[in-house]
Length: 108
Length: 117
Length: 130
Image (cartoon, rainbow over all chains, first blue to last red; front, side):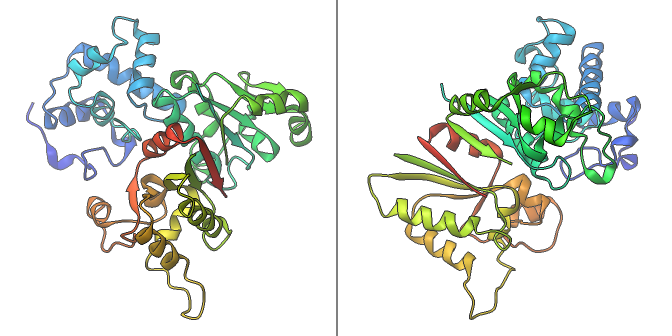
């Protein structure tokens, strides 16, 4: 799919401006901009993250993200190394960006 | 190891205090610092199960309570006499431990820093 | 003893910033004690606003903090999230948010709450001014 960047209202760091705008094809576009090609493993985290935000109204930093993944998807996936391979650099930031959520505060 | 207490005595939505206190607690948790929360005075309003803040009140702070486990925040206390004073009929968040004056004073002493919001 | 100060009270609605300054000067005057840093959170971040100008014949709190910063080595931190929420910006944040102008005094630096966590863990004593 050819990305349609002009449809995306992103902030200066690439986070979605209006959280209500998010849908899966928007996520694909943001991921393309960030150089990530989304697989089932990515989607699992993205949906978990959106559920986390919906439940607690906060984007998790690394540690709570790892704990949430471990609790919901099992200990094998609840590891920073696993999340790093899916969302290189800063998993909480990159995954929040693609999931259309606000930038997590105080991320290492 | 030293443990920090975040003490909430301000009403949940009257100012941004409760929000900023919670933000600080979450960051302490994220950085693996031992932290507990305690609620007294009007601060106990944050624990009311039936709260339904509007957009203008900011974030729904009660929702965050259920997420505290992901930040390793397990100890949440409230002062029993203030629960009775400010709230006699509504249910409180189930994760909170209510303490009488004596237990409250002892709990405060187990912390090396107390930061009040 | 190592101290870290957390200031949360507004500079005109409370005496938090005044008391913190007096306390900081006192620590500074006693070499057996060390002040690791002062962190401004909540309403106190307004203290760094250099667009705020009290009448010339009144006490200028910001000028006093700036003087203190010249003599003392301890860093003065403004919580970046609290500052941005209330419009206290330095050049970098002003650019990042695509805004015109900056109003954070150069004596203060914008830092995340992680900086407070570090101070909190290194200090023997933490004192809050609210």
